[in-house]
Image 1 (cartoon, rainbow, N blue to C red):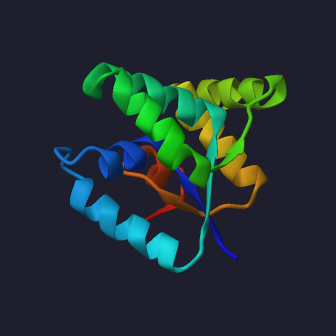
Image 2 (tube, rainbow, N blue to C red):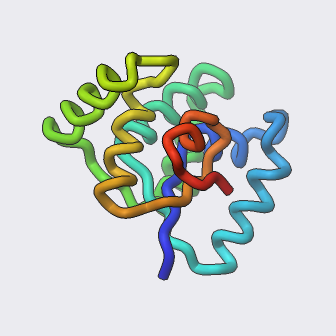
Image 3 (cartoon, helix red, strand yellow):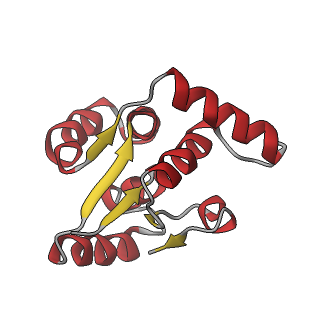
Length: 132
């Protein structure tokens, strides 16, 4: 079974009908489901998603996400080593608009040998990952 990393940008696009990426995100997600692809993310992506949904869509959207979508994700929980590795990557890249969440995502993807990402964030492509 193949695996794909899932970023906040794709989750938000999928769950929010008014988002510009909603149609593409729905098609990509249905394709991933049909091909029985493992959906991998990090606890940092979850935190970022909860915050974004709460701020833009209200607290009820966080509860719906937590109950209906989050269980579909295989979560890599971030420890001190991964956090520090992400910070090191940020320093190495000169920050350049990257967030700690993205940098830690890159580290996790490289460690788990994931080369595809369900995302609408150009930083992943710049880092050499294939976006869906």
